[in-house]
Length: 406
Length: 66
Image 1: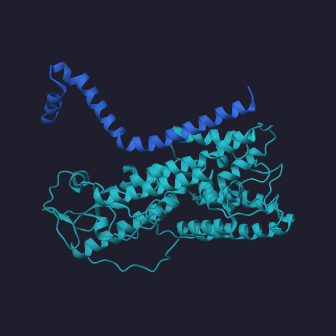
Image 2: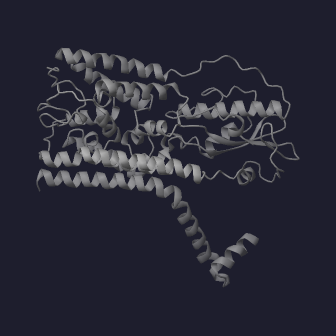
Image 3: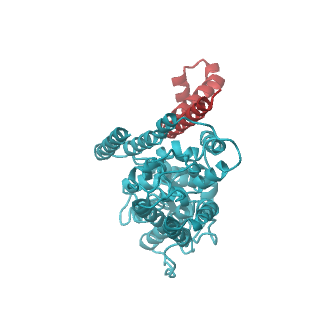
């Protein structure tokens, strides 16, 4: 087990170095703006790109530009969303095309569609570009859509002001972040408090059930932001999000790993909650020999290593996405991804927390980083089906068996 | 069939699916568009161009000109 982790660590570090080297020596191919200009402004000829800010201007007065050239600092959930925009001489959007982004495809597939992008055509630079007011929001992709709207609004205003010399209305003061992060903290904070209380007293063990029950509608359905290995990949690739929710989820999970190991898995993961509740249905569980169980539990580390290698070499975070909770709570995935969701949920009828034990990359990561705690000897109703005196990396800190440090 | 055997089948199936998902993520980006493009060209060639007695390469050139 220790050897496996060392091999994985070396492989991941080597692939990260390879990925960074490839980025330096083989720069990423940029989207050819000229090809897409024909798409957003058919029949219009644009001469060479001009500067200050970088833009193309046709004889008819159509101005086209890459938003990343104008407002590179606006970021979505996983970096900037690069858009090619065309403006009419009167400051209205004439054409739009997303050139590149690093958002998770599951969440933004509709945002990329022509059907959705058509909503922006005809909008004026002085419109408010507010979600659910003059732009349709997309549930489960709020952060990305907000970033896209902000990118379009701010870049087009700069270009309209500097190139088209159109007066731009001053911006009204607005709240910097949504309220999703507060909702997340309202669930996280009592959960971590009760985690420590249940280490002292078993009377409050039901608080974990309540936390798990709430995690499904709140973290899963409403926020649609279960902690994902994609958060970690984006962080390692230095692509932080400008979303406060992203920061809070990542920071709170890292802190919880340091102080309470796999607390997130045991108290807050909505997919873990679903798995555990399905596992509590009265079906006789399979009798799996300890050696077989132990061997298969290593699989999650191998899968995490494989995903990390793919992501770090390709530098494409979405390539490493096989997480069932991303598919389930984004309501989007191909038939392979949905098959895995169904199988891993049904499997809980016969094997407790099947996904968490054998496949989950977050379980692998949080398990590897868990500090030793000898107070968890396991017992016969362990929600993870752990053997007596399990490795701490397999303990989700439900605190049922906690016996104290002594 | 023993529980151990059933478990191994289930775990293997889940593993294969996971590997397929990871493979699809990469392949769909790099290879699928090329394969789809080739198939589209091939089908168009078989349906339209081959009847004019042209090779595929010449046929595509002819289609662009058209």
